[in-house]
Image (cartoon, rainbow, N blue to C red; front, side, top):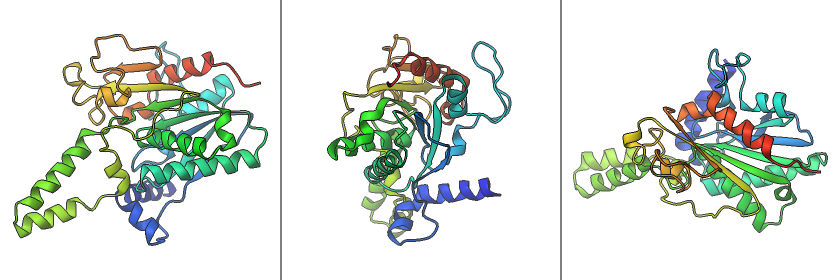
Length: 292
């Protein structure tokens, strides 16, 4: 029941979470670490729009690309803890808020976390979809505010993140504008209903993330595509290939740079819980130098 209620609340916040927050409605989700215990080396997970931390859980039986079976109901964080000793922390947040506001909240959360847990020596960040945009925003806030936790961040991983925006949100904006220009009262009503979507959703249409990637952090991008003929336009069906790789890849037939992984046949939501994605996260995390 808790999982069902949490999922319903996450969907509601994704749609009108900014309004719920502004009116101090009790249904508004407050950003917090909902699962995990800090250790010297932590990996922080941020979910995507209208999701909770359950999005990371592998459905049913799964196996790594080499055929090794995975434990039931596991996720990337549990596997990284088992294989590399990284302590996973799962953050839940109100995805209806603007990306900038969620980024500021994440920056403050990590600042308070590291103050309470001085044993933390290394932080790695993993964001799925909108969560990746929030990671970018949080690191910028921390840089501007000279927050100590940023010095502990070694790597950031962006999984299915629309760094150059989602064409579906931009199409929604165009449709609303068109309906309003028709001068028909019914079309105007439809436009008003269609425009009742959160600031967080609207931010997904931005054609370029307004905040540059910090050069002190190693940034890695994982993107999928469902059809090679439509990869440039549709990518994983929600995020085009160029957007998911921050402009590094447009043509899936070309070899990506080493900080980018492109996975064929993977739709958007699947990227949050797929063995091939974990295999790549494991490879990058295992190759990174450890904090002293």
